[in-house]
Length: 423
Ligand code: PMP
Image 1 (spheres, rainbow, N blue to C red):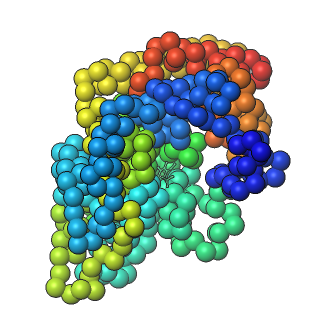
Image 2: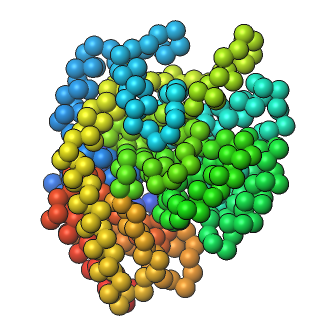
Image 3: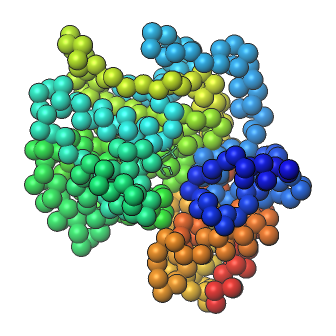
């Protein structure tokens, strides 16, 4: 049996219909922006492998640091023990985070980072005898992960259909626009006394289709939240570490979150790690003699030393002037491409960019997630040496920062070629 047949016999892939499945491509090697398959074909990873890869695949600097750390300490229980990589990473994150954060709580992926944030916020009130404050406000079209709490605060969509009855009730606000902002603020005020927290993906709703919205409007909502003592949770799992052109999307906002969630690019996309950072005020609610006020949450791989080491190495690379310049260059190229797209005859709409991200929709007459655009575009792009994975009919690019001008040009050309199919 070849690898694909062996895979079919034993593996169930994520987000993948199992009947009539398209065979997965065996990948044997990654280098820079490129993924190589078993037949030796190379694909430019134009979506950073689900938005995680920052500096390219198999980066030698990160690999070297990981190797040394693996020989030293690969894992240790994080209750009752600590280690240099975890402390060092927390110190460095607190220096660069957008907001007055005081403590870092580790977990091991994006969903756990948001679960931790929600639980931390709800128990913040519970610890202070304010049990009535347990509602969560979130945006329609949001996505915060696949575990039950994270699903609950995500939009009710095709992703969550089978579980709707089991998800906890959430107050959903429309993604901010000039038209709805006043009513959203009113809703927030109305529910304030029973609300623990407001969770949002700042400026870009990722899995909801890379929908972008205005910083000034989000600021207005955050002001209202703060005025009503609602804890503000920024889910920067996708937007963190330069994706939006700034280190964190929260830097575009004048009102800072009380809790921030990080994962994906945190380790440069090398290892699974989650971070939930909070302010001193939130932490103080847990500084109590009563042991029942403890935050009883943790994962086997909390603060895994290898993952923390990868994150430190990724930060080293991210803070190099060359990387900062590379991000700026990608932002400029993305803006130029957006302009080129507007000149095309192709039936596309809502061309939008923020930093290193560009997205647009292919007009279909019907906008559901379960159309075949994604499969068609993915297959057509792969044949031309580029990996794209549209979300429904939303095509987007979110490249690793090491992508060369030439590679980016290839990605844009391939997209234009594919769009001719829809003309
Ligand atoms: N929050 C956001 C904003 C995300 O984009 C994602 C993943 N796409 C998650 C949370 C969940 O992260 P993970 O897939 O690592 O659980």
